[in-house]
Length: 346
Image (cartoon, rainbow, N blue to C red; front, side, top):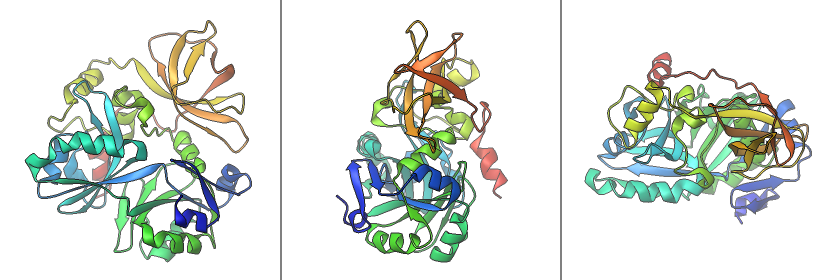
């Protein structure tokens, strides 16, 4: 168990889940500012003189768009176009790039990229010495500006100084991700909790669901095209860059309209959280999709992201005998070029 988490009276209930004794944490995040350890996420650094070229040949992002301000979404695919991981890409300096992704995929992605790294004089390092914190709430931007002496960035952008990197993520409330040395985390959390209540990271994961943002986990590694989690609608795929592993399949699916599944957001009429991969079934018990994320909302009901078939008419749906009610996604299902997002930041 992490010393800095236990020092703040939190508990790690699993490898990727932390809880605090906070009453109604999801409701607190709606009404107040909260802070949470993002233990479900991790950091992979790619360093060396050829780091940019290594990433350019493997990732869906146009790497030169990661300029220290714009921090694009990206993904890594197999030759068949199935995602091995999705991530956010930061540029730390001329020879160092940083990937934020689900902690369960750090080692598999590192091992995948290791096959190419020697050709680019690059190294891959899982940064266990760094920690990730999440701030949620209307006062979050002002709080980090005072605490870290840096102006908070816009969504999918970064701001950095010698203390940390800050990233802004979308959601129903302002959200800032803080990457800092783990040795500073206990003191930083202690200072932040003077104005922000400590809560478990389920609150951050719930806001990902409400933002229509699915982070790949080991449960769906090498199983989904990027478009199946609406990644191109979030600016996570560049269709203007050159070749990368899986690019031909991803591009063909886009230009020929061959995406058979899409990410949907829904609420269940019940409080039982389905496991990742649980089937979404129609009234005849036929599987039309599966769960990729699930959390309880502020009212104690389960909210989910599920990958659903786009090829069949759907009547009533359910998950584990709980009625499945579709909710609106906060973005249109259409291509959003990262080049457009980057240009808007100039």
